[in-house]
Amino acid sequence: MWRRGLRAGNGVATVFLRNFSRKRAPNLRKINPKVPPQEAAEIAESLYHVIKQHGPLTLPNTWNLAKEANVSGLNSKTHMKLMLKWMRGRNMLKQFCHHVGSSKKFLLSALPEETQINQANNSLEVKIKMEKPQVKGKSLP
Image (cartoon, rainbow, N blue to C red; front, top):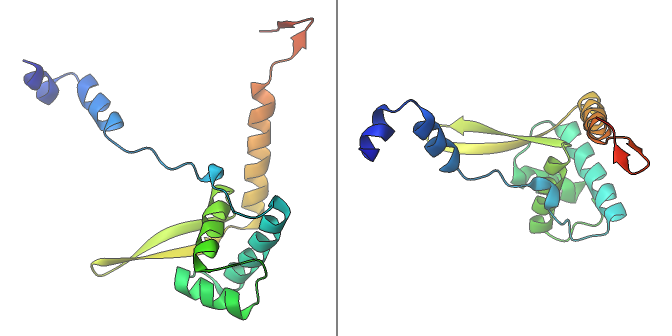
């Protein structure tokens, strides 16, 4: 009877299975860049300029161009990948997939500055809306 309900049910069971059988998306904001925040911001800015200048790039091309541009602070290609993931978590970069035959090619592109500013403003507005003013220890509705 349970099986029959899963196949031809009202949809509640199928929605439940569909939502809870998927993996959660990784939280990219919690990635540790392995360097102090100021240095991470400098590295991120220089990587952003490299990617913005040369258009959508693959990881190997990004590494080669970063070496040519003498991006200071990058220790290795693995560290660069970690920094790129950190930048994606802060909505500085966008990663998209380009199918080539039966294989995939992942490309990194820079988001326009207007998009970054709008996203930062939207997140600030959400924080402001979520905070409730308090009067003498009591919150207002």
